[in-house]
Structures are given as structure tokens and as C-alpha cells.
Length: 266
Image (cartoon, rainbow, N blue to C red):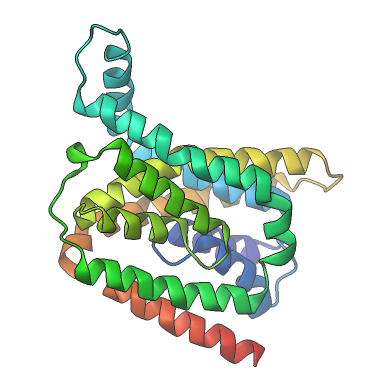
């Protein structure tokens, strides 16, 4: 791929992976809008790996605290602690989408990548996000999360397998439904992204290893760097302003994007 294509697709992945606007939908649509050739599996691996680097780099203190708390609480006689409970919540929350992804991967790739499905999911789940943000109590912080909350958010995350839904969008929506603040719902969504994106990257990597596709290492390196930088900045500024601005800018964007998709295919 040429440098311009790699630049645009990598930045799109970095910005949309963690905003509630659907990265998969944007990456599927981008070649049609800009006239690119299919980006191929190697660039898919690169941009997902870049997103993973960004989320781990931003939350490394949280991840370290969760791991320490989780191991401290492993002995039967050890008291529980907020970090251990959050660690279990992340584990429980990621299981449904991993299982569903393995079982439904071929069906989703063959049946759910149509532009009208992306457009409909973009609009519908944008409205669902608006409803949750408008009506939820938003009183609880991240230390109050329970396994029941994690199950609800984890089951909701399965819907993100449909392009246009947005993994971050649907998990933030579910987090708001269970009463988390916007920042707490966003942080839990981002923590869930670490094992989820890791699993997704592993699946794409296995697919790449099974093909004879030529690997463009320059494109891969550029894709990793650009997606990591854009994703890191996106996470930082999203968390900085989300309590102040709410979800409505993203809802409006989703409605406009969905309408634009239907305009293109009309």
C-alpha cells in the first residue's frame, strides 16, 4: 500500500478504536470512500497492535495495580481488594466476546460487512448510547463494579462483533446502564479493550500466517506507530473531557455518518 493509504487507515484505526463510533465500520468503509485497495491482513495486524500498545501504555499503572491486587487476593485466606475485584470483572467481561468471536467469526465476516448493516448499526446503537447517557444515574465509580455488572457489559460487548456497533460504544453504554459515571464506564471499557484487542490481534495474525500474502514491513511499522500515537492521544483527551461534554457529540456524529452511508448506497 502507498504511504497515504497507510497513514489514513492507521489514524482512522487509532482514533476510532476507543471512541464510541466503531473502528471496524470506518475501516470497512474507508477503502470505498477514498478508493483504496483492500488494506490486507498485514495492515490489520499492524493497526490493532498499535492500538494495543497505546492502551497498555496509557493504563500501565492500572494494569500493574490490578495484577498485584489480583495475585494478593488469590490465597483463600487473603482478603479481597478493589484491584482484585476489578481484575475479575475484566476477566469475566471479556469471556463472552472471545467465545462469540471464535464461534461466529466466519458468519460475521461473510454476512455482516454490508454497508447497509454498518449504517443501521451506526444509527441504532448511537441512539442507544444517547438513551443510556441521558437516563442513567451515573453515580458509581470503578471501585464499585461487581461481577454482575461485568457480565452485563461483557454480554453487551458481543454486539460489537457487528460492524458499525462500536466495541467501546456498546461497553460504555452498558456501563452507564449499570450506573457507572461516564469516566468509570469509559475506563472499564478501555480496560476491557486490552484482552479484547489482544485476542482480536491474535486471530488476525493467525489468519495472516495461513495466507501467502506478501508482508510490507514498512507499511506495518508505519501503521503500528501512527495507530499507537493517534490512539494514545484519543484516550487521553477523551477521558479528560468526557464528564464535561457527555456522549452527545458522538451520538450526533454517528447519526450523520449513518445517514451518509445510506446516501452512498442509495
